[in-house]
Length: 541
Image 1: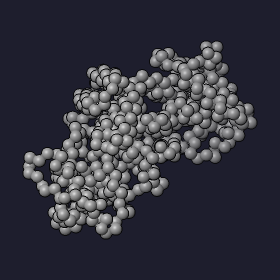
Image 2: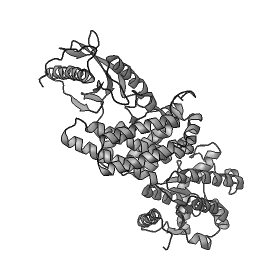
Image 3: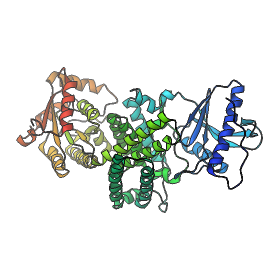
Image 4: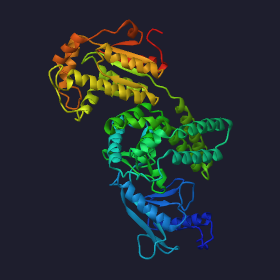
């Protein structure tokens, strides 16, 4: 391409537009130099960056812009942010981020990393195929549950090691959240027209004001040390699956208050984005794996707030991208913005259900619970996992003991059900459907959950499983060979359970959903149960 005439450097009073034009002219001349040498490249433009993808390397240049959340207008600021981007993103993607490069030479004949003073700076990265991005994998229907669970474990480790905000730091409190939220609402209101958008924004503004007017939960999170130096922009366009691993890149370096956030806010971003892509099942799998790994169930108290505000942020970014874009790209960006805004408001009234699994070991509880969780986008609490958590051992650690002894004695059982009830309350109160995967053989083990459902005005169901005796024993024998399974159940435990099993009462039968886990059409039956639970109906209604 033919470079434009070189723009002369303006004086100190030059506007942002002049700085951006000079920067663009410099990069066009760099492009022309590459073309003369036969160097092939692709230019990708975002609302704040230009990224040049070459054969094995990519260079990310920050636009000389000033927005409400960033200021890249000076060369010094762009250099600083390049160095910060390198530091911060090497925490989660150490193999992607290679260094900071400088455009040198002269404005008429620029070159990368040559001699002389720096004219511009760029973050230097390894290239990766665009099809590896989660946004592309979601569009292609290729993203798998194992990838979301791998990300959840990576995030739990990352958040545990991340720097914690000092008590006197200004981030994460209700006041800071209120100011940030009101600024985002004002920005979107100024960019998005239409009666429906105004109605949704008014609803969201009222809800946001009510949330930040009750600051206790936010201040408790802050005091407990959950405000940490996080990624800050954890949506599907910044995550990839490549070379057998999941990597997260392009975290926020340009604004401290957008990076020093509650760890649940970080997780909420990708949970929200998976829901936006209509993959509630993957969102729930990711959230469940993160909760198990981090044990931060207390964070669910603020999850709903961050889900809504993260959707509003994406709405704002889409509207920014629409400005100056080609007509069709602008139309698509505005359409996405309206979808994100609708999702933010839709989540405000989200209500789940409380589902108990009921049956002896080998009856198919865990398999059926996992399948239902996927169909419902639910969080599944598994007694085999939570029991071992109480004893400080990994879920896959074998702890087999005679029935009624060891960690499976009466005291251990009571402690496990007490923990399941506590966690179920946290999950259900967050508007999520919760499935409690435990035997629930005794009435006194089931009743507290029914009382919780009544207290929270939630639909309550008991999935009562059964299977033929030979199949029960076959499953237990197969499970004993699976080193990754958290269950220690064997034939002796099955006999012990069958002797203690208390049938469902007449009242409980009104909530019961019977399931033959040995049926040939099990998948269809589980889909029918999920539809019943989703509709909030009782069995027989």
